[in-house]
Length: 119
Image 1: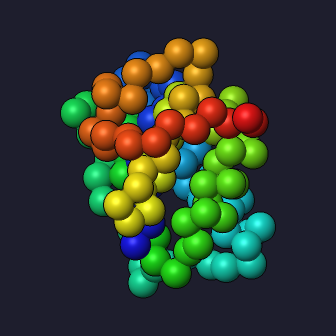
Image 2: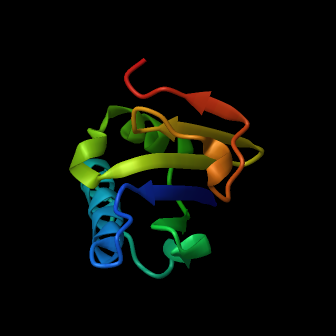
């Protein structure tokens, strides 16, 4: 299973609900590009609003981890209001700082490899 952790730049209580909508839009875009459809059998929300933050963790089955990692590398973070993302592929985790600065240690999934989008 590919595990994905996403952190939104939405922090106020009135806008945090939009974080989950943005996350789902991101997965919808990936599914469209890959010609797949996510459903309960291959996609699940593992945790949302982790530690009260706009952070969510998802699991995907039947998805090529490298393709999803490349997808994240190519998106515009502002479109989905992303601050941070991590993709766990088996024993390796790739983290993406999508904002000007972020500290991966602030998020529940500890990265082992850091990737900079667009590099």
